[in-house]
Image (cartoon, rainbow, N blue to C red; front, top):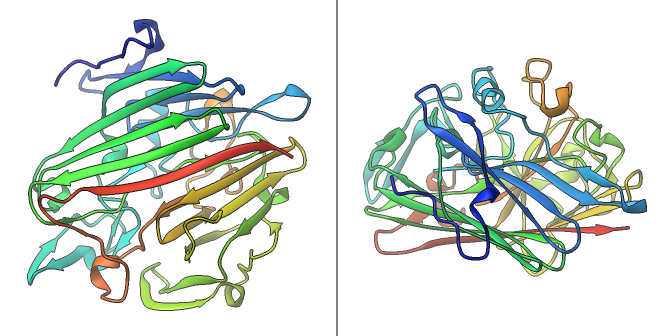
Amino acid sequence: MEKNHISHFTTDSIAKLFGALPDGTAVHSYTLTNSKGLEVTFITYGAAISSLLVTGKDGVKTDVVLGFDSVEGYLASYTVPSPPYFGAVIGRYAGRIANAAFTIDGQQYNLDKNHNENTLHGGHLGFCRVVWQVKEVKQEADNASITFEYTSPDGDQHFPGELVTQVTYTLTPDNEIKIDYKAQSSRDTVINLTQHSYFNLDGHKGNVLTQQLMVNTPAILEITEDGIPTGKYIKAADKGFDFTSPAGCPASIDNSFALTDASAPAVTLESESTGLKMTVYTDQPSVHIYVGGNCFGQVKGKEDAEYHANSGICFETQNYPDAPNHTNFPNAILRKGETYTQKTIWKFEQL
């Protein structure tokens, strides 16, 4: 593996040892800032965001994402029955694939089963559980970015093709974090990438239920009891998830909202307590919103936080779950020689 490269915009001191995997592989952290006081720490394990400090009212900084202080915390979180995937890039395929199988041009591929009979978030050893290379880091007052790269070998978790993926996080002068994904495969394959941070605008030790959520669509995907899309669209209001106007965050949700306008905000989240507002933009057809889970009470977060089911909310911007198995869903096949791209923006403002 080639050495991490840091551009001339920075010094080597920006890379800090975060810990090591059981096999001795080093995990490093990188902290970037912008002129608005945004301060984000990334780790090479899972290309994850472990800390995201945003300046709210009265100039107070709030860490708005859940995470761990050590590599050991991240490793331990993947041993519980329902891993939280804190802050990580998810691949090769975010969400569920029914019966752990899909077909391309008549060829069936049987995947790693890690969620009953289905595949979830790429299998047992998805992109969230590998160490990514850092290809470039830039840190100037109004130009801060970091690019991670990972090469997934042909047959990884039984997906076809060697897949080379890059994810670039950019901190902008407008207090945004732009996430740009790019991937190419040596064979026809399927792909669906996302970012799995849990947000809490009251701080990672808080509770999201008092925060106001708005989602720019009335439609969600109908799913089975196992969370697999049926192929039909239904009204979110029919399931108690009408967020077309601001409403309190739900105590439990694990649903994909169907988006139709990439130029409009997909999601907004507001906290009266800290005076913070978060807006999500994406070019993807869906935002999967997740609150809850059954891992809490089993994992203790950074700063000794006692995380619970309502500690954070996820906005997983992505293609539809199980899209390879539904002809009426957006295309999820990446052909050899083509380039997969995806863009998501998180914008932070003061109310």
